[in-house]
Length: 103
Length: 387
Ligand code: HEM
Ligand code: HEM
Ligand code: FES
Image (cartoon, rainbow over all chains, first blue to last red; front, side):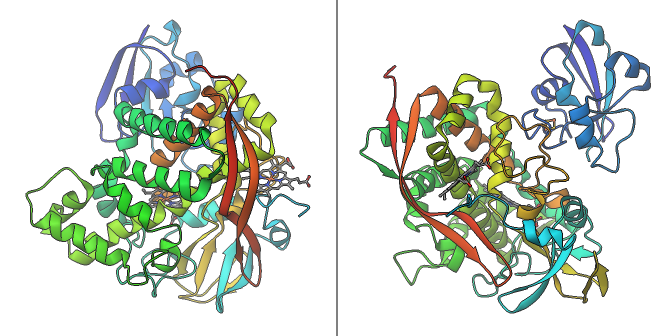
């Protein structure tokens, strides 16, 4: 169980307590604006893009190789970019803050 | 036939570069072919505009309709305002109740079909599925689907229903808006548009019709083709179905792979905003550009073994639904239908035997591409009787 915060593009903070599953699924359950998760988490759509808060980069870790291939197609990604469908929520990530950035 | 019809129709074309000049029904068009080139052109509305009534579809549709289709035939920022009006309808498939209705519908159709000697998938399965599911998106009574099914499968290619020459889609749509305007606002698609406002102004009737026309046209052949291809492929390659049956985690990846390989919409148009060279092809102002999704989705530099159906392909950044601001609004609905269909064919232990088929061939001077079926007859068998 973990508490997560999504900062949306319109500046809202959406807090999810007791989160489990992938970060994308949590965002969908909480109707976080800007996270569609259109492909259902299989690295096709990039509609689940987030930028990880700098303080959390080390704990969340870098994008997987498959994920990076998709991120590399986009102009507005950087080293904080992740596809939230590829991040499994764990106790470790309790307190995590991510920014939603639609591509 | 020595090669699968769903294999790459543009392999030879791509060898000539990221773009080539083609002739399409006497029109000179610059066709963009490479994955990255198509994807970035789709986002570059300053150079390649959608603000062109009748000219986004290829071939153009002056003869098929009288209104600008919305929101597709607009550029940002106006496009965004218009799309926002209908977005809540296109997001309905994300709700669990909607998914349940689609599941019940497909289960009913599959059980029905598997009780029969054989079934013609295009007219007797895909068309009713498409029509009835669209009533959920529009939030109208499911009985309305009987009318839509009655139009047959050619209605949006020539604007006419199969049986009746005097049928007009626009007349039907106008009637729906007449009815909507004569009643207080309801939460359905027609009524919502009839009462919608942009900057305090109600939509014109042409605008309402433009929205409805696209929702009917964009969602018909594309869904019918996607659904039919599932039966064709599993009929040809039963081991693929067995693979998915034994591992349900493949459903979402296999769904995306269907969209990539089938790419129901071969390409779509844009209008070139000034004289320029497009990947080496001199293109005049106002000349049309084709964004060839069907070529991009087989680009070997992005999709390894592009001619092979990989049920576990990941990543799969196909652009069957387009890319950028105009990315298909109906994609949530389409994905839900395909995932549900795969899950139920697997779970209900349905096996598919191909009996007979007639292909649809999109034939132009410069290319030939198989796009689905005129008819597809299969026999569905339930291997174990669990209910
Ligand atoms: C009109 C219906 C179809 C017909 C008549 C047809 C026919 C064929 C034939 C004859 C082959 C053998 C090709 C060879 O060995 O050279 C083949 C292979 C194949 N087809 Fe189809 N096909 C149809 C629909 C589809 C659809 C809808 C898909 C995918 C969505 C598909 C995907 C494949 C794949 C993946 C192979 C295996 C060969 C490979 O992996 O390279 N086919 N098909
Ligand atoms: C497998 C099924 C489908 C495919 C492959 C498909 C493909 C596409 C593509 C490629 C575009 C982009 C057009 C462009 O860039 O100009 C598009 C746009 C659109 N599609 Fe689909 N489509 C499908 C299903 C549907 C359905 C079911 C509906 C409606 C019920 C629909 C409604 C729309 C609309 C409204 C747009 C315009 C979006 C905009 O301009 O913002 N589509 N579709
Ligand atoms: S949900 Fe599609 S890539 Fe993450």
